[in-house]
Length: 614
Image (cartoon, rainbow, N blue to C red; front, side):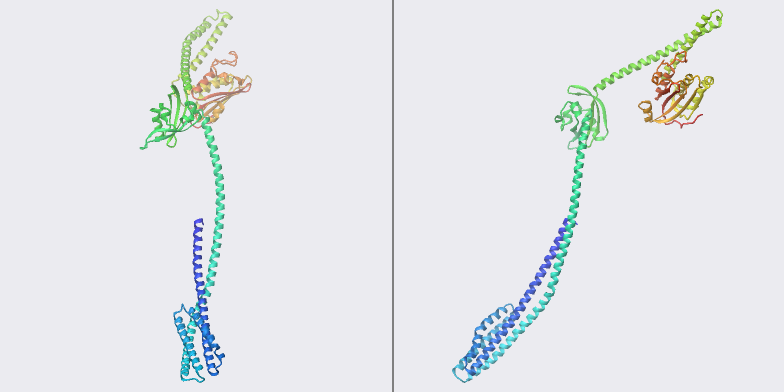
């Protein structure tokens, strides 16, 4: 129950109590009136009886005087003559509100007065002589008849008074019965109303206390939320001010037709003030076109499109600010009926970018020239080398017997050097052809690749008694000839750099790894979601890991040319092939234990499931 309901209930109880009080007052008033009327009726009976007694005493007294002529007998007459007017006046006052009784009282008064007059006349006649004369007798007879009339009228008065008293007593009895009930009902309703009001008041007080407690808690929560909001607001303000990019928030200013006619700046961070070289008081609340007239046209139209369409707008533009051209990188996004623009000064970056682009172009051209030179030089050097080897073979065939041991040794060393030079030129050609390949990439079946590698290296595998274990290898996307050249170089290294006391054991395994793993293991910024990782492990001589990056450079050798054959280009070719395919290569090695060459290729969604090959 709420306060309004309590007020209504209180008003109803008070109204009912007022009605019952009025009713009780009316009953009490009627009861009092009835009691008063009964009292008046009884008083009327009493007065009538007294008046009748006085007139009787006067009648008896004057008769005794007639017989004895003793004045003592006239004492009641004189008393009656004195008191009767007073008694009759009292009787008149009691009969004022009763018309019938008032008439009877008037008749009673008249009869009393007549009777007193008759007695007075009789006394006068008696005083004239000792004996009653005829006139006295006539008066006695009239007195007797008048006395009977007095008694009759007195009886009528008594009857009227008794009837009225009886009626009033009956009404008084009804009032006596009803009035306590009324008082009891009033008391019960008053008590019930007070109890109900008290109960409701207690309930309301409890509800008020509960609401007050809830309100206090809500206020505390609101205070905490306000404090938290303030902290968040301060944090956001600090975040905005800590940004090196300028940030400005604009609100649309529209005309009566709802069209945008300008924008008002409502928020800006510290960087915006620094970049624009303007203070907070100078720009907050100002219009965009008034602050930065250079926005009129292209930028202003794009900002309007952002607000109307909700699509972001970004650009890099050279802007004239304070008579100085500055390159800005701009991003505008819709915010309510306006937009937020983030901008940064990229003038230095632009200058650096131009320099880097020029350097990159120069480097690219230099690399192309170098690759072209290497290709042409390698290609042109092969013909002289073939002639050198050819003439060397002829010398050894036709003139061997004519040459002494020293001459034969020179020719043998020349042939070995020519062979090594030819291998070097072939490797340089292979290195330069990696980026010149016209072969299109496709899915490469790694099972077939390693079968062909084993066929190509069959003699070397048989000679060294090597064992090659191949485990599950996923297919990769790439140029098959280059992929085969990559792994053939790695397997060949495993066969070449073997330990003298132990036949080579080469294990090839593959698995799919995530970009996170690739980033962690290869220190790269992944451009693909997943990669295929293939590991070529051997039990060869190994090397010190401080050379793990150096060995992938061109012409880098860790051993003498007489100790192990090779040109020093094989691993450089491997690195260039894998980089050309968007992957990476690394090596883990331990001297006297062996090496693990780990290669990753980007995983193509068309690649098949890994297969297990023995």
